Image 1 (cartoon, helix red, strand yellow):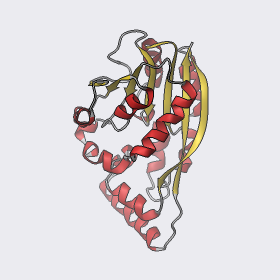
Image 2 (cartoon, rainbow, N blue to C red):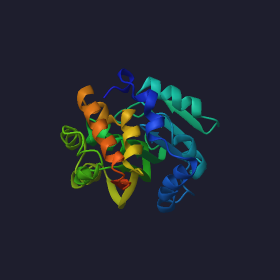
Image 3 (cartoon, helix red, strand yellow):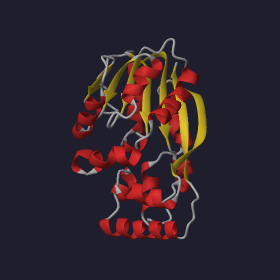
Image 4 (cartoon, rainbow, N blue to C red):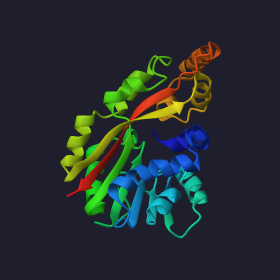
Length: 250
């Protein structure tokens, strides 16, 4: 999806933003496993509007290169940069603007399902990572597609999700083929919204790339269904199962 041809860059932060405390917890979960002593150069691949880029620099006390193909998202990321340790550049997953072995760590947060050729991205990650460097991923895999909380209200969205997500075993194989061995994996319950009304409010923004592919009619009908569920008073949280993965360059 070309985000610059959609409204997603305008609504992304409102629909997906985390609090400063949530960002710190999210990134520290990776730092605790990779350590920070030898992490000096980081690439935030697919940095989007830069919601993690500045915090990455702070958590790891490192220089961070945010890489993003969308012009409109890069503009927002640049506006959030408030230190000399962060640079934002145009690039893609299979054409990272960095030299061989230039990075100690790469972060890809909810990026994999936007990539047409994950094998090429794995190869490019292996190129820019030093030996012993880490590729850190936060993404849902196809094995957990059924946990998307809205797939029951948007009839065609499950087919979109299945088409865009990669099975866990296939993903490991693609990275292993490029000498990136599995270092750590855990499947984490992520609360998308605390109740149906909040989920409806988020989905109305169409900041979710899967939801953005729906027809206007299906989107409107699904929102109506979510609001009906909210009116019934069911406050159950909307939980998505997401994989926290770390591959290490060998």
